[in-house]
Image (tube, rainbow, N blue to C red; front, top):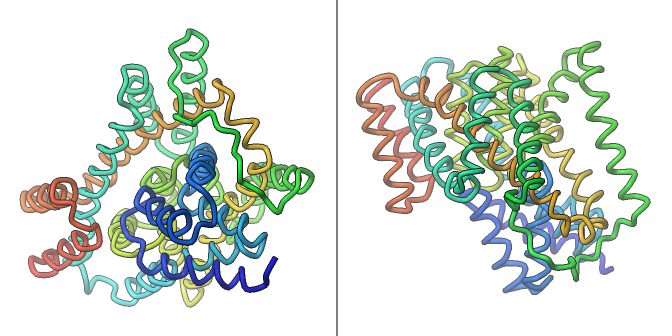
Length: 399
């Protein structure tokens, strides 16, 4: 392997980290154009296999594809270089926003309210797109309503995880009767996905993921403090399938319902996250900084970021050598499709509370949210432009 490949990976992903707006689906389009069409690091079939793997795994799908591309191109350090290049720009921006918000206090109330109203439009657009792709049949729509019911009636992390478990069981149950949904994976054999990680190391990485998932809640109950923060973000990064906006309900349960961050700050940060390039999961940096009192806010943001992305590092490295064999199993795809449908219900529950209840508090908010939604969905306006306009209108109108 040429030593220059690591630098090549970092520079390529660094440019995307500064320019890749639009969310996970758009990121995958950028990746294909950059690494399949322009640089020819892999072909379309291998890229499709990689996307299928990262849709199957919990965590931020586009970031995981980036890690896997770096791993295939330049080994373990290549995966790290891809992660840092793609994530650092938006992470710095989100942590800086949290620190600035803390310094301003109530001095930016109008702009912050505009960000919360923008979040209404952004989540509504994401929810509509997810319904069309993940809950478009009678069976998956029913699973989505079940997920909504569990999340709405059992607030907190337990309800979120229960809805995900319900989706997996429902997908398997429907498959048993020949009516199971499928996750849409192709029947390819994963040709061309050559990982620098062998089967033994991959098995150790999966074991480490399982061990930490079991140990962190116990350690958090004993120690609290930073370990508690690590546990919260590790859990969010371990239970979100597809990434992107789907992380909103779990982070809301971990951060708002536990009192770590106020609902108003949560939605303001979520709105701001739409205005920066790179992965939406860097919202964790904002939350970690906002939840950490005093001068340690930046460190809290870094801890949160590492904690929410660490499961993906272990899962991508651990699963890649086994993917060709696993992805051909119909029951696996059916369970995943059930989970995907359930998370549509999770996002619907979060759309009502706290997104709508906090973002729409007066008649003018309905107008602004509706206009922002039309701008996003009908006029295809970039999210950063819509968010910026809402913040500016909010600052003019007042909080």
